Image (cartoon, rainbow, N blue to C red; front, side, top):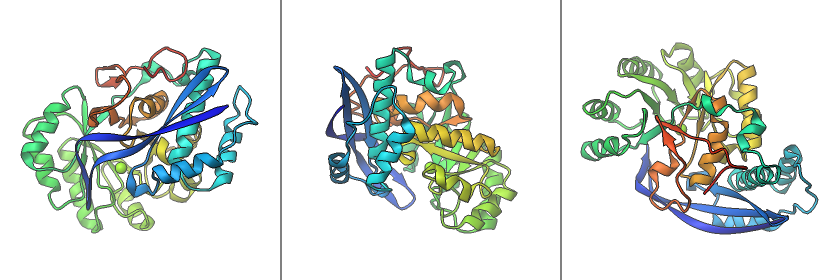
Amino acid sequence: MKISSRPFELKLKYPFSISGYSRTSTPIMLIEIEHEGIRGLGEASMVPYMGESVETANAFLQKVDLSWLRAPFNFDEVIQCLDSITPGNPAIKAAIDIALHDLEGKLEGAPCYSYFNSPPDKMPVTAITIGIDSPDIIIQKVKDAESAKVLKVKLGSDNDKLLIETIRSVSNKPLYADANQGWTDRSKAIEILYWLKEQGVEIVEQPMPKSDLEGNAWITERSPLPILADEAIQRLGDLEKIKDAYHGINVKLMKSAGMHEAFKMIKRARELNMKVLIGCMSETSVATLAAASLAPLCDWADLDGPFLTSNNPFRRPDFKNGRWVLPSDSGLGVL
Ligand code: MG
């Protein structure tokens, strides 16, 4: 089992801005794991605020030894092995997990979604994000996102209402909203949630800072819209801590250390009667197809990486009726 890697700078079509933060590209680590001449592809998207980088990824990869691994892979053992190197670094762990899933599919001649009993015909629509910007750029972004059936907006600035009103001046598509921990006043948050509902918003992510479990729980109890945890949850172990404070969770492969644990998180959330959104970072077709393989098991999808980036080195998967189309090829089906 041979691992090779190369860093890649994934450029964003528009600078990415959320409350208090902006950037124009994302460092990616593309990896290949080769076994008997067959190669599995994986990807780590290392958005700077998560603390990983090309340097940390390289240092991690040097410590990975998969010589003990035999197909069919035992992914519990794989994750245990990766976690024994260090508890953090979920993105580079995800790259390895994704590459092994792709490899396993290719070795077995099966598409990745089939391991998870994930039905391709149940694929939810994927939202395309309209980032915080000036009104004329927002209108341009809405036009660019023509193929989306639903749009996602980043809130949490002082101009939340203006942003929504600008979108509503040109589009009546349903909206998903993400406050990115930007709200601090609980009563105002409830007020805006009622207003957002009137504006056709359907879900809201992470209203208050992740550390304020009680504040988020207070809002969830009174909210007219489903409230989802994003920053407040990374891996499976976090779910029990936050389960009573939100209606649901945003699962992302770059937080969960890959597909195997993301699947477990979806399963556990269902047992807890929680809703699930599957989301992404700035990602190429590799991580997008990996997440899309699990998306049919979720209520909502926000897998817009290939729409928001300009130099995806792989072919963009087919997108029809606002949904990713899962290829029937073995593995992930990345071209
Ligand atoms: Mg979010």
